[in-house]
Amino acid sequence: MEKKLSQLKPGETGVIVSIQALTTHRHRHRRSWGFQRRLEDMGLTPGTKIMVVKSAPFHGPIEIYVRGSRLAIGRGMADRILVSVEK
View 1: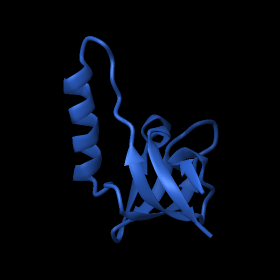
View 2 (view 1 turned 90 degrees about the vertical axis):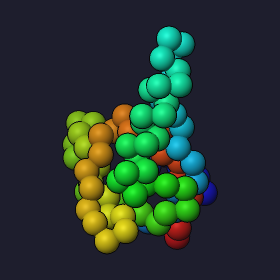
View 3 (view 1 turned 135 degrees about the vertical axis):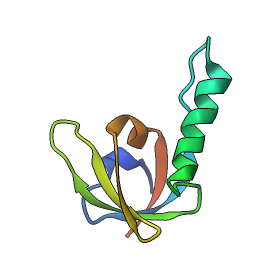
């Protein structure tokens, strides 16, 4: 089953399926490239296994465990990452 990363609960694991780029009409290519590049620099690429460690209340950041490190990412970023959930 595929979900947005922001929809996963603490303790759930999955594999990144795709990343939806942030685009606007004026800055489509520049902003899209920067967003994906930032995630790649953090090790978040399709095929990567992740686990949600904590989810802050009131739409706060999400703490994830990926490639042996813990990262905190904002809800906006997490909404654009599609994950295949493992049961």
